[in-house]
Amino acid sequence: MRVKFALPKGSLEKPTLDILTLSGYVIRGHERTYRPFINDPQIELKMLRPQEIPIAVAEGLQDLGITGSDWVMETGVSVETLLNLGYGRVRLVAAVPKEWERILCLSDLIRTFHDEGRILRICTEYLNLSTKKIMENPAYQELYGDKDPLMITPWWRKGSNSKVCLILSFGATEAKPPENADAIIDLTETGTTLEQNNLKVIEELYESTAILIANTESLSDSMKRLKIYDILTLLKGTIDAKKKLHIFLNVQRGNLEALLANLPALKSPTISPLAGGDWFSVNTVIDREDFLRLLPLLRRLAQGLVVHEPQQVLPLEEIARTEGSAGP
Image 1 (tube, rainbow, N blue to C red):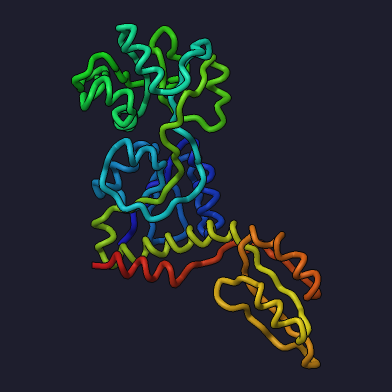
Image 2 (cartoon, rainbow, N blue to C red; image 1 turned 180 degrees about the vertical axis):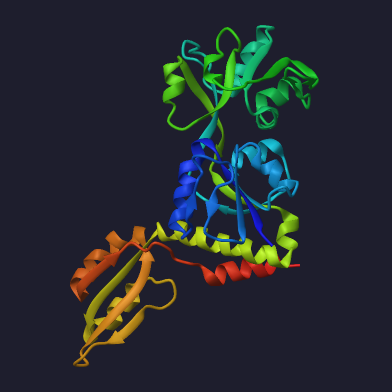
C-alpha cells in the first residue's frame, strides 16, 4: 500500500518542499522529474499544477495533495481539508484602470456599466469563484437578480446575463485592460504587478493559502488513513513549532509557585529538583507571542534562561482525536 501524494509545481513548490524537509522528509529529483524520490516507501509523490490537484484528489487519482484553497473553491470538488499550511497567502481581487477615479468598489463598477448601458467585460482565470462573488454583490443582486453572468471560453458559453461577461484568461491577466477587458479578477500578493500595469484594486474577494487535502474514500481505508495522519502529524507539528518557543530555566524554591502561576505551557511544565534541594529546573513550551510579555517575570524570578526554537511540536492527542472521528 502506498499513499499517492500530489505536490504543487510553480509558486507553491519551494515552500512545500521546505516544509516537508523540516518535517523530516528527504525529497530528491524534483528538478528533473514529475515523480521525485521521498524517503518513505509508503508514499508515492507526483508533481502537478495546483489547479489540477483538487480534481485529481477528488477523483481518487491521488490520495493526498497540497494546493491553494482558491483552486478547491474554483473547482468545487468534494475533498477533505486536513490542514491550513499557512504559506502561499494571496488575495483574489477585482482591479480596474487607475484613472477610473469614480470606481472605488465592485458595486461601483457594476452599477456604472449598467447605468451607462455598457457590457462589463471581466477577465479572470477563476470563472466559478468570480461568478459566485459577483452574484453575492448587493448591486448585482439589485440590478440582475439571480441571473448568472455570462462565462466565455474558447469552447463554450454559459450564463444568462450577457450584460456582465466573465472571460477566461490564460495568464498575464493584468495585461488585459483596457483593450481586452474593462476589469480583471486576479490573484495578487503585494499588488506590485497590478501597479506596474496601471491597475488599482477596488475590492478583495477571497484570501487563499496552501492547504493539505485528502480524498474522502482514502480516509475510509484503514491502511491509507494511518499514513495520511502520519503525514498530517508531521506537517502540523512543523507549522505549530513556528509559533512556539522551548524554554529552560532555573528557579529557587521560594519563587517556584509564583513562576508556575504565570507560566503557560502545553500541559504542565516539567520540574526537576537540582542538587542541594533549593533550586529547580523548569522545562516548558510557550507561545512565541507570550515570550516578551513573560520576560520581565522570568528575569525577576528565574536564573539561567535558555531559549530554543523547536523544529516540531507534535500535537499527538489532537491528531488522535481527529483521526478517530474520521474513522469508518
